[in-house]
Amino acid sequence: MIPENLRRRREVRSPWERVQPFIAVLAVVVLLVPPLWIAVVTAGKSQAEALTPNLSLPTQWQLFENFAQVWNDGRIPSALGGSLLVMVPSVLGVLMLGSVASWVLARRSGRLVAILYALAISGLVLPPAVVTIVMLLRQLGLAGTAWGMIGVYMGMYMSTVIFFTTGFVRTIPHELEEAARIDGAGPLRVFRSVILPILMPTLATATILICLYVWNDVFYALFVIGGRIDTLPLNLFQVASAGLYLNNWHLIFSYVVLMSLPLLVVFILAQRKIISGVTSGAVK
Image (cartoon, rainbow, N blue to C red; front, top):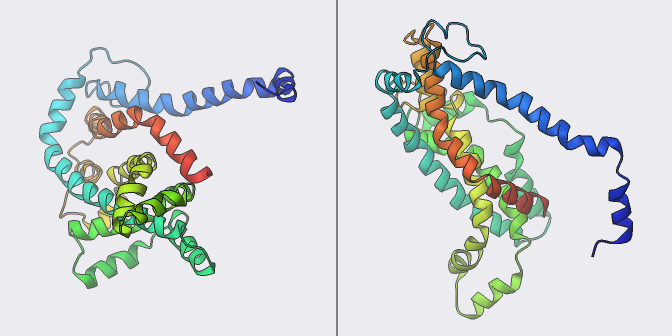
């Protein structure tokens, strides 16, 4: 039953409270729909119609023809392999190490632990120094290598995993771990058998977010592996800068649409997990 005072508050909502949801939806539509619409319709136009990207529909759709040309001339298969080569180990490594670190930080208390936690999540607000990263990788012999790029991504997004999962681990009852220890389980088995399955919704959220960051990154990839390993956004930057797609906006937008499709589909299918993971990990 809804309390009487709460029911009355709902019945006497102000006009502003009633119109807020419509304003929020309208803002989302205005901010997101026009860029997506321009990208799709421009990717379906001919070269002449796409010289000035706008909201108008193409006279004749040639979306799949543009996709085929971009796929063959833009070296998308090799760039796709480079993106997966960098993204998959980065995501798996940061999830594994970040979740273990979150478990340790959540189950310890004290001033030192609080300081360590503050340092661990400081990466959310402190941008990495590109020059320092490149110089360090050169000293280690990792500049221009996939391992160097994987290490950079893991260092950058470790804070994201720790931030999401530490708050969630604190809500897990200690009795579950104690029962596993009574049965003879060691620390690693307790984490693998008890903590990790409960963390899966939050880790799914972190996985999607980190995949989006790594998949679309061109800035750090340009300095660390530029010219040696192709990723999708880095390859698009290179072919567009070289003049291959000069004044061919239909090909540029076709490349952007193709590059965005895999993670866009994953994001749409997993949006509920993102919302639940954010609320459970950050709010609780």
